[in-house]
Image (cartoon, rainbow, N blue to C red; front, side):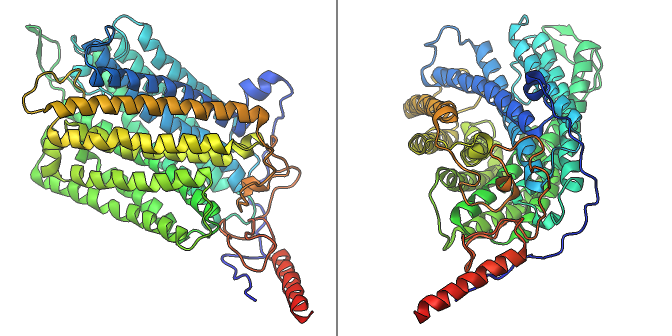
Length: 602
């Protein structure tokens, strides 16, 4: 009979290097749920706020699609308001939804539980980070209520356009946007330092770095990236704010506006582009790396098979993180650059695809001959792989200087960016919510509603963004309020735009099934038990579900193995949790072996 072959299994767990954190257990509703220092409550606060502002951005996308699909039918969508919708939709989705949800939401909930900690290392600072994030969101929303409305400079906020008269929201709107970004970075820095220190110093006994689940690795490295990249956004926002309010010329060259010489001279608009994209491309991986880690854990758990090439996956995360800082200028090919620089950034763009491809291969090899359970989380994980590969392939077009130049200002870029940076991460968000919702609430989400939600979302998003590639090849420009009677754009492009808009409305409406499922299952969902997926990681081994403040009861768990002992022969279940000692596994396997021998003899 086959027996368990140990991987990274050890009886020895070194003594704790850091004393347990003393927790303050609040007694009032306000202390527990408003000014909470519990990372799990803070995670839910982050998630609810991010989803709320994300829904606002979703409505903006509907309004944009109404104009593109059915031009000039809606009176209140003017050229200026269209540019404002584009700008706010992009900034909200990238910064205020995805970054906050992956790091503030999943990071806060999962890091302490997965590393075996009571809470974050600095609970009070963690609480402050959320309230600064909320303040940043409120400042952003406030820009809708100032004269001129929010900025319409595009989500990249390029100067000099962003702060010149003639651009929507060129005064109060852009000021509130920049101040909001500054506050967001300050709040994130508080939270990010917490995540990093908790992973490095707050791990329980036996939890080495190479026993961390890949979800923690992804969130950890994304946080390191953000701590290094967000300062570029921070200083560029301050410098543009000074250009607008004090008349400095960091980014503003000498120029004439409406026949008048302005009081600027010597600034360089390209400097802002370099600073923005030095933040902007790592931002892609600030969102992608947590998604990579979460998908790795979903696939391994729901395929009942250990992750293929764990160390390779860790090194791929580290290499991707490092390379993400040397590819930023591929966003700037159309701004003009020395051909040698174009060659350098095109080459680094191709090189970064190598560790990313390694991760895809390892996901596929993990699925190979696994005991695949097509649960809702697994469906979203597989959909992510398809979508991310598709988005990555179109990225090869845009990473090439010669191909990028004619495509850069077309709908092809919109399609690529949404596939790789919009749809792919959102699929992971959905998969993660379906996976960890039982831990957060103690109840399972409805399976039928979940499958309806998945198929409408997966097929619908392809109906939206696949045709956009074709529009891009035809030369349909992006960010345009109306195409008009342009001769080189055929009538089929207008019909396709209308079809895309209808698909967008259907996909948006399908999300209502998801939100209904979230609410109704909280009250009427089937009890989940402590570990409904048969997972090995520590968050599923808590004594209570949902976990109380402090997570693990009187004693913290001790870790004896890696996080991926699935499909193990000779044990009662087909998995071994990280906190089960080898002696217990050996005794259980011996008992089962003896029972098998006795049964054969009988």
